[in-house]
Length: 285
Image 1 (spheres, rainbow, N blue to C red):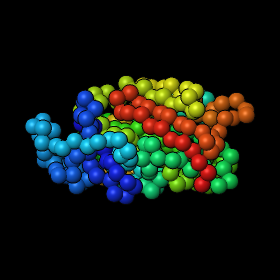
Image 2: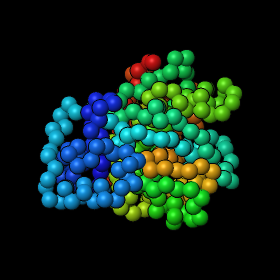
Image 3: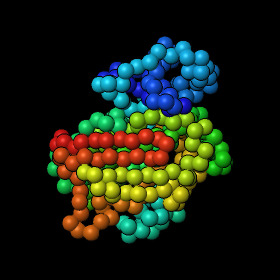
């Protein structure tokens, strides 16, 4: 299934996108697309049954905002330097273990919402990423297979980053990762049964129509199942938590000087095969 949330920010309602592109209202079946829903197999079965029997009213998508596909996210765990080609372009050694940092849940916006360039920023950068949404509580998992079994679905994430704040201002990466609007998510949550191999997805990102990133999850140093297993050894993952699994080569940081960092007025578009496409215009904060 392709689950999404539509409506004004803070007042989104759950919806389903059918294979023919018809948008269906789920608000008569479930209250939201969130961790509680993703952990409830019976509720997910009700959605499937209602869709199969044509019981869901249609929605007119014209003028309807698409919000983040998951509500009430508990935490966003991010994996740094998780693509061989991205490590090469930045001159970094591939890590021996996954690099973990966090983004606050309040950085999440919809896939077509405005992204704000922080005040004082000179090095705002783009990163297309595969987001993994957890569907079952995960703690101390023993195998990558167990890791995959705890995934509810997948989405497109834009891990917007401010490189000066991240790298040159001391401390951890968090200052360059947690500016407002720095995690557009969606448009859909695609349930795991529709993504048979998360290591066979293409990722692309354009800036002002120019292709900047063109990669594949096959380049991940630590694949999805292993990432979930690894993270569960250090913290408990709950339904509705999100893991951003890293970005392929092609970011501004890895390009020759003068590096083409983002500015107000730029337009970023990004997509992952089968998971949908995002578009954001940048404005000054």
